[in-house]
Image (tube, rainbow, N blue to C red):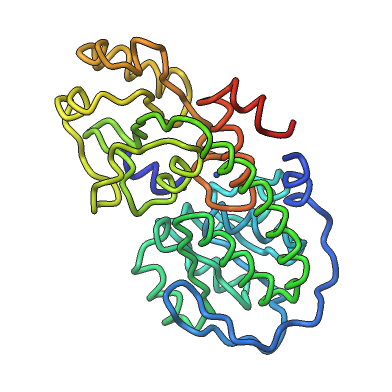
Length: 307
């Protein structure tokens, strides 16, 4: 089902380089306690030697921090950087092979709130494993997770340096976005039923940072269901989804012919995005943000953003 698939799969050349960078020796690990996104203090006496990541964005962070050689397990959806494809697979985020995880004897298992099931967290804890939970819903959340992992891995200085780079890139886009009009948009995460990204989601943070107004941003639901009529009534300037032209753009054009009166359709403003980049709240967030801004505002992007 498209909706479940979205939840499973859940965005500069310098950053791409940092994600694939060669492993380096850890710094002296910070003695400060690290609190995960459940508010639980996760104690560490030593830098983990065997790490399992249960989400693609966390896998990217592990590699970005130079700890890829210590990653002993990840999911079928962990495809970036390319080295991640070669790591032992322990499931597909929702379906987990607990026996395989135990056989790998990890010092640390990384999971997310949105991508992994609550039952998985409980079972991993009951198996006596050390679990760190991440829930980045915006740029600040990404920075927090990255900084926390930097402390855990003994890479705090490296994490801080990378975050400073991200911040400069983020500020560049948001400053440019503040100079121009903010068109209305809607981001589809599924079509059966029609489900869109609401306020308290990572996607909403990406859209608003790029200078867009998410017409579903007033919903208190993370992924509200919208009717065809409601979309006609709200008449967005842009329609966004992920996948390919066939699975995204053509679905909108061919299956929702009544939307031909929408400004987005009349102006051919249907944008199909790469899910591996745009649905991962990780090290490539600012790359996705800049790319999205350039898709929405090509002239302003060339004027205000650095190449």
